Length: 389
Ligand SMILES: [Zn+2]
Picture 1 (cartoon, rainbow, N blue to C red):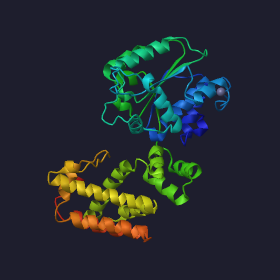
Picture 2: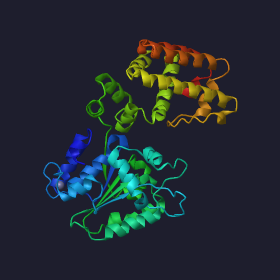
Picture 3: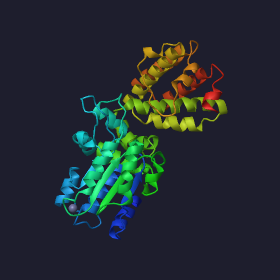
Picture 4: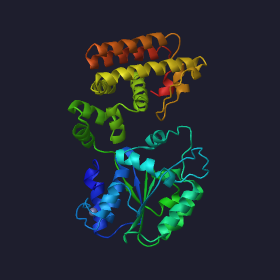
């Protein structure tokens, strides 16, 4: 991958290029940002750039080293990432046991996130981590001579999944690297990684991708219309993985979870503090997302309301729906859905979906439904403590 294939992030790319030209390559670096910001694609590009013997402003893209890197199969680039024991009798799983699957996923979409990885392996119930035997394997690999005579690179994805022993095993390698070694940690948050590692590492912080770059990507690569691209880029706040999922309508439930929570929050707030601006802007953005997606969203909301009601009456297990959005607590939300309002809310959501299907103006439908739901949610007045408005 070359720097110009990374979406946005021009200024960080430029700094990385300069550090190589000035021969100031820190041997341990942390690319901190969500996967949706492009931390991993940036690490791939940087490694390719460092290893390419013909680099100018970019890696050449054509030499032996670049070709191997484009397949993520350069013998001097090692990958480590969280894995789980998958019950096939192996007690100590290593990244190399899953390298084919990981490479396949990353070649398909280098913006893949940890959750995509869990789904790719189909191991939703397993705990993923990077264990001490992985660190031992890394130390062994990096102590060998490089095949091509240049740098040896380790790209370690999600270092927050290193357990303490595993992290400690890596310390010596970071403190006293053997030969030309480049260790790239790639993860969301510096704060989640052991301070002993961080203190010896140069931090490269990535901002969310500019909305304009995301919109452009959606239009150029995924044939989004301008309106859709603008709306998606705005709602997904600089996270390209999320924007792609939205566009492809895959993994929709996670995004729906986040949107549902945001919608309920704005509905509560709009009536409580009599401020309609935010709700109105949000409705406008939602209405640009297309009829099919809106219909699916309303159906999803209906399921959440049902689940909340069942929960409230102690039968939550009858619904298998999971809300995965951070910060949402079904147990706290459920009390606001009760026998007095649940039927009306579900009727409103069903009606909204029907209106959308019949080509009604989406913004008016969103606004209308928002008010009706807000009123229903305020049916019981102790809502304040939960949403803090
Ligand atoms: Zn090259």
